[in-house]
Image (tube, rainbow, N blue to C red):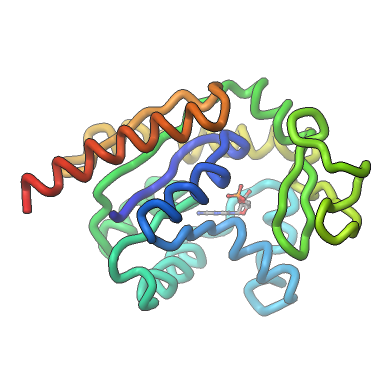
Length: 220
Ligand code: AMP
């Protein structure tokens, strides 16, 4: 399965990606996670993108395309992958076509207001990536990770002003990808309502992917 996840930041892509990756035994490739880890390690890439990511702007297409091209060459991608956060512009989508053939696009839809509520309440444990939500999934002890007891943080790009900026960027630069993939030949575009509870969203995605697998088997 070679899949792309689309949807506003905060639509639930990361959560659903973990389920899909486990179910189909494919790597979950989150460009946001790759960039955050580069920033944490202060690598050359990290230094270049630090301010861009903190401001909620997009990293230049050429940097992102090279990063994905290198990542998709790795062995674990031989039998498929799930891209989360890439492509984010039409240029990235067209570059991706030159690298590999995408079979399915899962587009998780959610309103801007719901995204803001979700993201401003999000807290993370930086070392493990565990996420919490002040309202929906609070830690057992306020502001502390359940497993290690270490402090939780708010991602700098989860502050409300930055979220609004990220949503703006998404509307302008990424939302044209919906029409692009809806009309792309040989790509199955799956629209999913992200406002439902996590298990229901998971179930809808599983159903859509089962249909896609059956369609592939017929072609094979
Ligand atoms: P995410 O965790 O996917 O919301 O990504 C966090 C931030 O990383 C974004 O707000 C961008 O600054 C940057 N980023 C991630 N993926 C891309 C991409 N495909 N193109 C450009 N910038 C990206």
